[in-house]
Image (cartoon, rainbow, N blue to C red):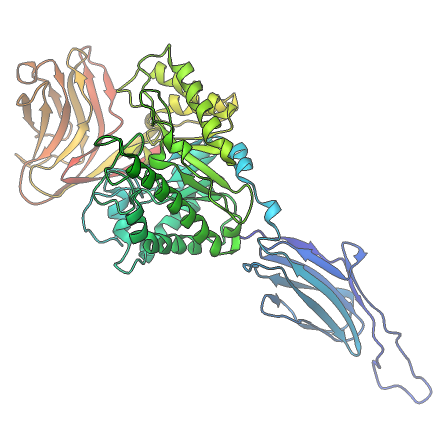
Length: 622
């Protein structure tokens, strides 16, 4: 993104010796040559500008006709190149294009009037010359605040051979909607300063290693959303690693040799696409790369510890990391000083004492060699259990202290690129306490944090709204000390209507996608755009165990379905609206509500796809 710098040349004074009209025999007038260049009221012979494109406004004064040019016109242009004599002066606009080379450049601006000439030497810095203006990796940690992951979106990979250029299919195939600028604006207004955008590239790479232009441009579009909102952005190589069979990047020396050229070609394409982006865009080498056994926790954990296999895995991780650094730096431009991130084996954080090899991913991780200082970061991930809240604070402190001792001490700061908890459905008050402790402890050790995904999820992203507003606020408050200046919209702040398209017979839409107790609710209600034909739609209630189901045909536009406890038991695990006929069907649904036993109604905020249908959310603020 180019920054426009406007400089006003107060005067460009020029005098020449010339004859203005045919002199009379006895009346010859001579003009004494005068020429000078003023910038901001001072006479200047030279001027220096930054590497970004800029616009300079000049005022030319001359008592005769004049012309202006740049000796090197390949990066300079003028709105006007000739003018008449004018005592008041004439403004001209000079446009300087961005310098994407690795060296500063210089040219003379030449103003001529008759035989007189005045020169202004213009110097434009390059990205490397201006590298001190770029944040170091340590400054990035200080300035990013707290971050969030746009998960299950560009990283989605269902293992099919679907057309890799069909970005809408891939972006939404794990249940998330298309990403919007409004979602990024919401995160910024909530106090978040950075967004990690995981990207899986495998389905979008041709046999010769070329990334689909359509996919690359969609990645760029989302990066632009983040930057336009005023936040930092990280993009990476995500589910090309990991435990799935489709992972082609494996922490194994032989695999590294086999995939080295393809991996470097991928990063060369990414780096060249984003070469001109400023310091707010960071690159992350790879996500959670595992050994040939797909071992978590540490290399060779699966199948019994093998020292040789583990050593090879750590060597391979360091080789991938060095390849990444070397390729990105070789593309020059802003990539010469861009902050770059390398992950430990499996993004393991070394937490725990139940095995002597748990800290090996930290111990054997090298800081790659780099051509510039203080522009690298390490990344790890953490999903600790929080079942014992009394032990949680000391366990959190110990994990971060270990990261500081074993990883940050190698010469680069650390980010927690993903974090959350593996505890199943912990109470919200525990999550809020955990988030407060986690973020405050990370900040104390100079470690940046990016929460994984759930803060805004599924259709809430379309509004946009927070799914977990209290947790989002707790994260921001833990870092900034006060979240009162930020906003956290929720689903109930919007009027919602769902355009549902059923693609085949028996397809189902989630009216209520979570389990509810029938001790609390007696039924469910909703409104349709039109009365459905007989036998076209049915409400299906999944009871407390398999085989316990209730079917209720829908024959009116505003049905109220009463739960049959004899059929479903004491709870409903899921409530769907099912299309019963062959073919396809489209309808509008609104005001989905659970009915309590006292007759009051509770809005259902997240109608969603179960299977065989699609949902478009139509919203307006209340």
